[in-house]
Length: 610
Ligand code: G6P
Image 1: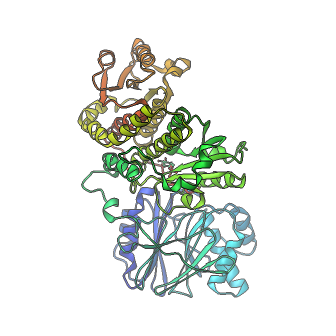
Image 2: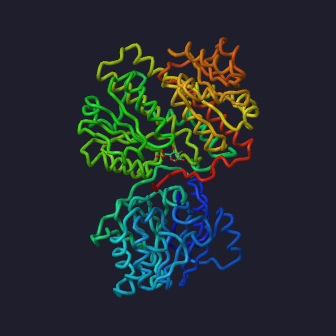
């Protein structure tokens, strides 16, 4: 989704803006632009990558200590030079960059047209620039008042940075629904839609809240809300290192993040699972009594986080015997679900900023329900909107296709399920201990799976040209099948579907022929015999089978075309291990097909609009 970066201070703004935009590339975008204020606001923008923007600017004079930059992910209007941000108001009094959607833009555009405004772009953002200008000129008010008044008239979401022509020493920033972070330096301030462009300059940050407006000069920050109440900024310390957002010698962020999983999982359970087999989740401490007596748990999320939620459903129902429903946040928020006050909602999100998940949380809170969050990005919106929760601490995930965030989310859900099972007396001591030991053994077992990278790469070369691919699994491995299929389609653009293996007979079996690779996740668990039969059914129809099996399996080895072995693990934890070869498989296939794995077409890392 759109990325925002801004700078005001004593340094040259341009290099900071360009570097910041490159740091934000991972969010997904189709055009880029910057504005520099050197007493006179200059705007450069074009369709394409940040590097295209650099070539476009060429040798122009790019001096200036105040500036802002934007990467756009199209919502209103196609990706082109004109729709790219920044947008200037008609008479040039205001220049802005915007992340989010102004929902009543059509109505505002019409009103402004009736008052003589014309529009260069198809964007909702230009409408806002003109609305601010209209109020400024008509009301003869200061830029700050015009901005605040305009924001009271818009519906929708925004993260905004605005320059006023008559106030060249100031940047204005505002937030509602779309994240914005201010980095605080000595005589300088940085702005960004997430902390990645800021971390190399300062670790002191202020996260704007909804309806905040910041008026920023190089040596002064005034924080207000749109109603003009003055607020006290809360400066927080950023727990992020620059090394965490570099590729560290890997070719892509995705492969780096796949390889980081042993560490990410250790970081997720560090300090929470003790050698004496205790689980402590500080962020749930006050809510645990409510959670263990919940009538029902509703898990909401999108994309990969929804898949993690499904594993969570299986875990919590089996181990804690509490009914669980998992739902896409986008469906939940619009379909009028029944929500009881003694339900608990768990929202799962890597970024903590997904618009649909945030909206679903608001709805659940309005229904009087306790809402918990499982998020990766510290200080993001979801942890701030929820009553409690657990950070995954997987470190920054930059690759658009989620990998380590998934395993970290499942690790948290596993800890929650085991903890609830223990407190409710629904798991015996033997299983409790086995699962905790299993969790502790996971980082080493993932290292073992990663050693098969070359084998997986070789197998990938046989699958890379398939137009379709089917992923099958049962029980805990069904969500893994869904996740494996999602990884493949996201980054290699091969059509892939995940199915419960037994459902194959009710449709997908019709697709199977010698051209159809079928990835079967078939480790030794309580459904093993059944999945062996499913593999036979595929082989009988000449399908090409790649099976993920438990080390030492000979039965499936004799039937499948390719196998990848993983170490033995209790079935409740198998999702955490079996997903690793599927991540590697999609990575290698995408590379072999010449795809951009870190920034797949049309996708965004953090979907901050609905
Ligand atoms: C986007 C990303 C996915 C991610 C989903 C949910 O679609 O491309 O990788 O799973 O959003 O994001 P969240 O940050 O809420 O986990």
